[in-house]
Image (cartoon, rainbow, N blue to C red; front, side):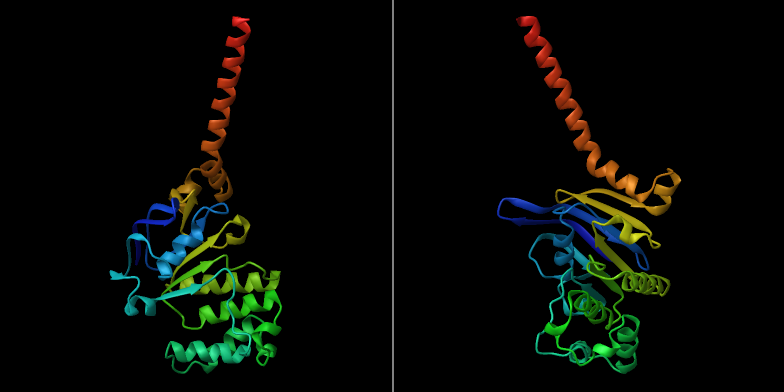
Length: 255
């Protein structure tokens, strides 16, 4: 179980995350939605331990920045960070040894085959196209087979075949009881099975809703997203328009 309790992250006076709290139940797939700048990547980087913050984050009751927690957590960043002088296979070997994996050769071959990288084993990181770099990014993140996996915009730059394969793999992990948090601002990219959605805006959690609840209300995920992220704004606009009309009428009467 991953628990995020009252996490706030500031950059100067700006709150990138403002008192964020939520919980990921074991074996669940949660979709983290929000427009650009909502704080999605910030909370994910806080969970993985890259950022300082106020509040508390625990993994199975263990503080997230401990070695024990990091063995449980996995992370696939939005942008690949590859070594230009390492080949594809060397990247995979490096991660396997860093995590002290055993009997990993077959798993490496399986991942490279599924994401159409098997014929790119000897290519250097800086020789790969952006799409191929993202595929390698996925293979690296999936190799340790963590119990809890955080994916930040994982489908960015992938071709349709790779997106389909990733969705299949995510569903296999879900069926295997893995816990996943997928962050995105592209709603169409998460039409696979999911259990809960968390919608962020302006650094705050605006909605935390189970899939069954949404479907029970006869809503789609897209409808809920726009209702949450634009409802307040639209209401403010209407209030502003009424105020302007009232002011105009009062000015006309005064004349």
